[in-house]
Length: 317
Ligand SMILES: Nc1ncnc2c1ncn2[C@@H]1O[C@H](COP(=O)(O)OP(=O)(O)OP(=O)(O)O)[C@@H](O)[C@H]1O
Ligand SMILES: [Mg+2]
Image (tube, rainbow, N blue to C red; front, side, top):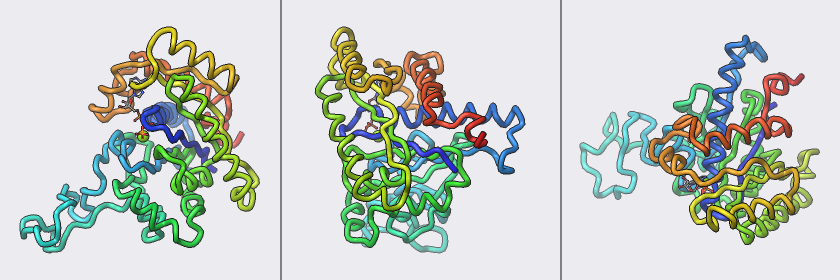
């Protein structure tokens, strides 16, 4: 059974994707070590899955599947997915003269058009697979609202493959709408990412409230274990109050409010922004950067809390 973890906060740009992709990169490196040490559990390699549930598809981008809606699953080429049918020329067509077919994405899975197994792809990280996002997520979320069992779709899809993974990571949108409800139903644990600011930290109460509602109104019916906020990660992403005293005040405030849940904060570091351009999680882009070092501390802290697997806990020991 996989460890299931989401990063969440309805505030945009607070480091959800940066944190998630950093954890995936560090887990990839860690699990490659397990293999070197002779991992033989379950007769397969340890594996990680990222499910991209944000319309901007940033985690897909980080993992080498930029703009999934314009990648053809038939010919493997890029195509202009905005082209109206009447504008399409013969040279725009796919093999066999038909229009291109985009690779399956998370919405195809949630709308039950595609099985989760069909939609999962390999990435440029050896042990990390990806269920790609789609820029049409918001529109599709509205259609999903009227579907039967809309809140359970992700949980049910994940149940089909969770024995094949050791860690499943959910990248959330900046909202607590139906997609977020699906995430909180499917995941066990939530890492609350928050910009370093008093106002932002106070707003985490909405995340706590949303998760509590989902646990009491829905989740207790289908799973014995409630979803939990297991860590609060304060990031000094651009738009946070500032470096210096205000930043330290915010971290102290988070510690007063959330105590032991607060893990090592990640200070502002231009390497994070460069890593995005280079399409590499920051621990791989520049392992000596301050941000990579901070995530290097957060990672074992999360293992210590039982949020991420170690070689021993993944084996069920
Ligand atoms: N510690 C940091 N130092 C500098 N820049 C950062 C840091 N953390 C995040 N950023 C930058 O801030 C922006 C937002 O980060 P990220 O995409 O991880 O947030 P998010 O919560 O996933 O956003 P969204 O809600 O839009 O999905 C990105 O451009 C990222 O590169
Ligand atoms: Mg994001």
